[in-house]
Length: 312
Ligand code: BDR
Ligand code: CA
Image 1 (tube, helix red, strand yellow):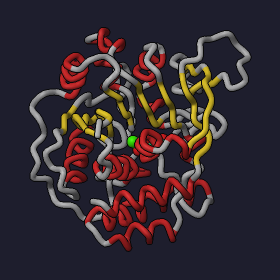
Image 2 (cartoon, rainbow, N blue to C red):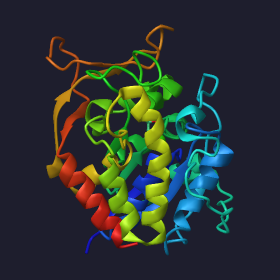
Image 3 (cartoon, rainbow, N blue to C red):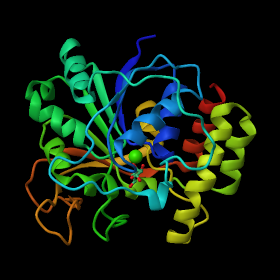
Image 4 (cartoon, rainbow, N blue to C red):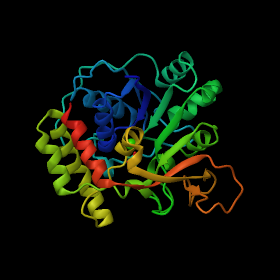
């Protein structure tokens, strides 16, 4: 089987953790490395959390790298109010035995992309885009070599989740996001407009628990915690499971629908910092730079996730 080579850039985060588990469970993917960034919680925790998640599986040889500990220009904003103090509150997980790689994440991203032929590596980004933006600034040649970027970020019809205008990943580092959106690389965006249609529910969480393996039980415990905040905020039955949609889209694009559009990032205004301005109706002649997903078959998505986590 020819595997799809990916680098996962992440800030775990319960939903990042489930995305990692889905990728680890998927034989079609070769995870070249997991690069961590400051986001939901500071870098020391996101880079520890990624290793804790690997240790729920047998794939403990996958290298984990620490990257940027703050956005390119801004002060770091974190989201402990959503994810808890550790970022993956819920299960009790031991300190990881896996060591962090000594190489820095941005260096790893650059070296890896330069060492493969053009169009072999897909970047899956689940957090603020700082590591990617910095890699582009340091070595612009990699922009011509990356096959695709699939990212969780943005929101338009749903508005924002950290301010009325902005989604968290883009808000934290709008300059990095802007750098990525003008890169010319094919980009698929999974914004709040789609992740707000992929809601957990009691029965979905119980299905994870019933799997009975370490990954399934930890997923249920993480989602028990994660759901609380969102249910209160949105008044829905469950909370949106954002980041696993990136990996699910890569493996099962038929679950999703979207449209090619122009997306630009607001970096100037304080009021709308990090807003993803989507030209949904093509009212400008700006270049279409993003495949913007707005629909998911949520039942298929959750069933797929449950089937895959059973394999761990
Ligand atoms: C995004 O922000 C984080 O809180 C989640 O992990 C997800 O990547 C949703 O806005
Ligand atoms: Ca995330």
